[in-house]
Amino acid sequence: MATGGTLGSSGGAAGDIVGSGGAASGGRGGGDAGAGGRGPGPGGAGGATPGGGGGGAASLDPTLLAQCAGTNPIRCTIPVPANGNYDVTVELGSATAASTSRIQAELFRIVVPPASLAAGAFAQHTFSVNVRAESHDGYSAPGKVLDLIIDGTAPALHGLGFAASPSSPTIFIAADSTVCDWDPTAANIIDPIQRGWGQELSQFLAAGIAVANYADSGETAATFYSKFFTPVKNSLRAGDYLFIQFGHNDQKDSAAIAAYQANLMKYISDARAKGATPVLFTPVARKGATAADPGFEGLDQQVRDLAASQNVVLVDLTALTIAHYKAAANVSMLFATATEGTHFSETGATQVANLAAQALKTSALPLKTFVK
Image (cartoon, rainbow, N blue to C red):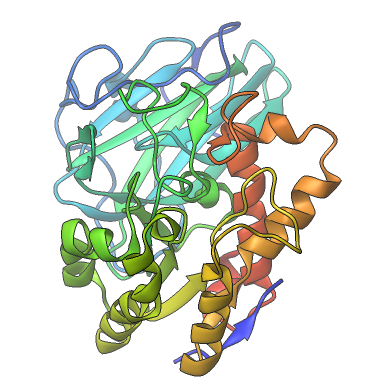
């Protein structure tokens, strides 16, 4: 059990799929199959032979390119035999044109940030993905489907492979709307650019550990536990991690404030009972927060106190984000709209995910070896 602490070459493909122009953020829509949706792919299960450990590059399978369509974005919709963790290798680049590509997986999780290559140059990127059926208030996505989006100013896909990685550890996330996976077409989204920081965490992690983001909009520590935590609890295994961040919605109700630590303890106890490691996060600050007035009715301090008393690793995102906003050249660019002060844009969510990742990198947790 981790101790507590506060953390202020190419080949294998039959050809290229290339594109140019278009929006860099293009991606699939909601849970329906069809254009932009998560539906069955055009072919069979495909992929590399399922294997044991995690973090290894999966062999490229030229037949998988037939399950990719479009030029910008390039969408790959690949049925897999079971939900769980997969190591995925994507070879980017084109034999004939310069390219700039990034990779998103599942519900718009950036797994590889934009990468530029000269014509004739290729680069392989391996990352881990947790495939599951996602269920959120207002939108969902089916399981047993590996979804990839390659977009950018001039995306180019040259090869693809995947292998099951059942022994890889998983980071499970229990949290609210500031952390969750957002579908740009969701009815309850503030703006299509809205993202949660947990949605953008994978790009800062090496292959061999996958993120399963169960966070959902509008939830308190109590409501999430009753509505969404059972499948997390049932999936937790020894060696996994449980990231816990609540507070934005808890502060709106006096009863939730009074029961806050007791509710957080449920997650800690359940994780430890499964041999998993809980990690507490103070709530991300709102745009107008200050160190003197963080704005959570003392809930941020309750998280610090609980982490200390229960010997749980703490990431003080309240303090980290307040300092980050203060240093930002244009703090409004970090949020979903010019007037929004709570929910992040893709830019903001990516920067906050990096804050969290770098804090974890300085911790005593074994997962620090996976942080880039």
